[in-house]
Length: 177
Image 1: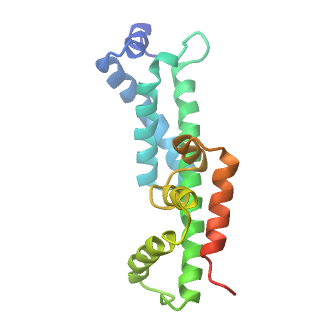
Image 2 (image 1 turned 180 degrees about the vertical axis):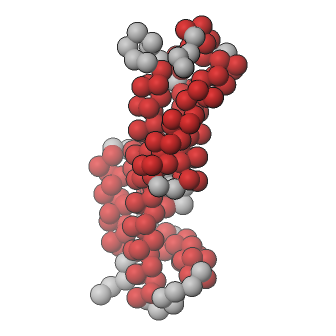
Image 3 (image 1 turned 30 degrees about the vertical axis):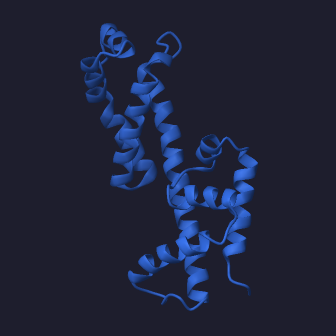
């Protein structure tokens, strides 16, 4: 079902009822694409919320003469899905690196849930060993779960510098072989 042009215009001008109608119309599509791509229902729900929050915030930039509303929303969804996959990959990489570091240092056993708690305490302690800028960058990546681009924007720092801080910091925090 195509939405009435008045609904789309109402959405663009900030009408919450129009936004609700758009959500009802397209939430299933956005969720199903996110779910198939990400493979996790909870993460797909998060992406769904992020897509519609971004759509609401950026509704003034939607130009119906350049794209359909569904394609505009799916463009936002693609970006949010990529962000979610990057976060997942980064979390896994950091978890593996920290696990290797902490197991190698004898601070954790190889299995069991307590390692996450101890790992978090160890992360805080190890982050304290870094200079201020690299510590802040790594904390935003690990604790706040921000992408490299988001960190660069928040700290008004070049993207390459953010990546270098993270790479050098992780190397510095690894135990000596």
